[in-house]
Image 1 (cartoon, one colour):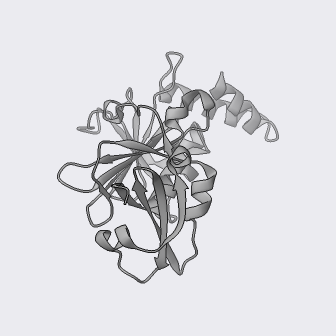
Image 2 (cartoon, rainbow, N blue to C red; image 1 turned 90 degrees about the vertical axis):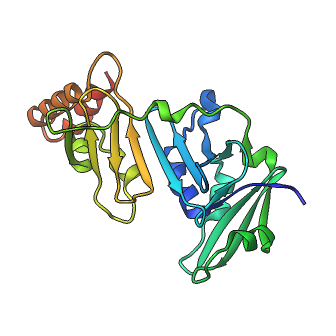
Length: 239
C-alpha cells in the first residue's frame, strides 16, 4: 500500500482554498501547502500573492509525516470533498494518490482508522498534487505589534470598506467577527475568530501604504455621486 504523506480534514482544506491563486503563471500557488508542524500536527498554507492564510492543526486534527508538498485546489478535488451536515470528509494524501474518506458527522475520527477506512474516491497524483516549490510563508508574517503607538487595531469591516470590500468574505468563517492588526508598514494580520488561523494581507505596491489607499478611497466614496462611487473607488485602488 502506498505510503501516507498527510491526513487533513476536508473542511479546513476547502476553507484554505479561498486563498489559493487561480493564475496559470503561478501554478505553485494554485493549491494548499501541507507541511509538518513542530512536534506533531500540520500546517495548511495558501496564498495568491495578495492575501495568505495559515492554519496550524494539532495532531488530533491532522498529521503530516513527510516534507511539505502542495495539494491542488483543483475543482475536481473541491467538489469531491464537499459534503452535507450529516457527513464529514477527510483527505488521505498518499504518494501515488489522494483518497477521499467520508463517514457520519457524529463519529470521532482517529488517524489510524482513517488510514484504512473505506475510500469513496481516489484522485491520482497527477491531479491531486502540484509539482513546485511553495514560498517561505514565514518570511511574509509581519513582526508583532507591541503597542497602540506602533500599531492599529480595528474591525475587518472598517478596513475592507475602505480598501478591499471583497476581502472580508474570504477571511470570515461561520459569521464570526473579523479584526486586523497592522503596524502601519508591513503586512496586515487578520483574526477571524479561529485560534488556529492567521490571515495576512500583503502591503500594496507603487510606494503607497494601506493608509494612503484607505484615505484616498474614503475621499472618493464621500465625494462621488452615489451611482458612480463604487466604480470610481475601485479604479482608484487599482491605479
